[in-house]
Image 1 (tube, one colour):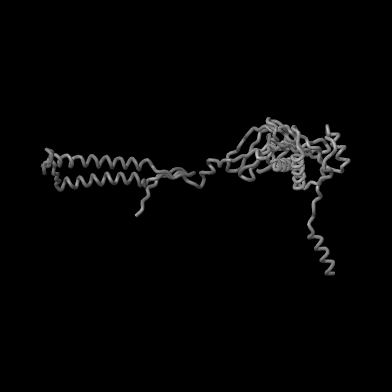
Image 2 (cartoon, helix red, strand yellow):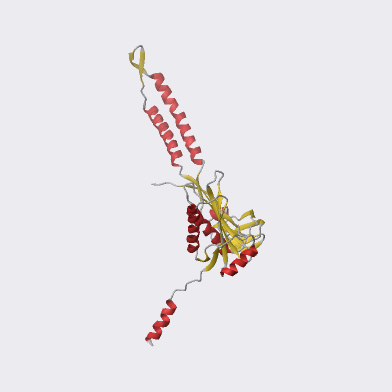
Length: 317
C-alpha cells in the first residue's frame, strides 16, 4: 500500500515537459557573398536561438530555397515540422553586414518576421538571437495586427471604436488602419486618442497612457492653504505708520542739535531727545519692526476646500 501511494505521489510530482515545436531551417539568404566563417557563425547563432525558444530543429538546412508558400507547406510535410525558419542577412552601402531578419513561416502561408541591427563591432550572433526571439514572440501571439495598451492606473477601462476592450494593461487583436482609443477610470481624467495600426498581420502597435488625476478628485480631502494678502496689507500699514511717526522726532532733534567737534571744517552734530520724542521714536521703531516681522511670519491664511473658503489667523505662544 505504501509503495503504491509513493508511486502515485511521484507521478503527480513529476514535471510535465511541453512538447517542442519542430521547425525546418530554410537556406540562408544574403545580399553579399559570405565566407565560410561568417556563414557558420550565423547558422550556429540561429541554432542556439531556436533551442532557447524551445524549438526542435527537424532539418538543419533545406536543400533549396522555397519561392512561395505552397513550396514551404510541402517541405514542412516532408520534414514533419510545424514551422519553417528563414534567416536573411542585409548589407550596408560599404558592403558589411548591417542587419538580420528572421522569419517563421506557417503551413497556412502566414509569416512572422523580426529584424535586428548588427553592431559595428561585429555583433552578428547577438543580432540573430534578438531577431529570432522577436519572431518567436510574434508567432506565439498569432496573426494580428495587435494593439497593446500599457500605462497607469492598472484596471482602467479601455474602449476601442466605441466597443469595450478590457482593462489596462491589455493586448487586443484589431484590424489595420485608424482606431479611436479611450482609456478611463474613476477619479481620473479620461484620455482619448486616435492611432494608426499597421496592416501587417504580425504588427504590434504599442500605446502608452498616463491618466491624470481629476481636479475635483484631487482637491477632495486636501484643502488648499495659502498665505492671505492681508498679511502684506497690515504689514505695509504698520511700516508706513512707523515711518511717519518717526519723522517728527528725528527732524526736531536734528534741528536742535549742537556741534560737538569739527574735523576738516565739518561739524559733527550731537543730537539729543527729550522723553516724549524718545518714546515717539521708540514706538516708530516698533511699528516698522513689527510690520516687517508680520509680513515674514504671515499668520493669516486662506483655507479653501469643497465647503468654501475660510480666513484664519493663527499664532504660537
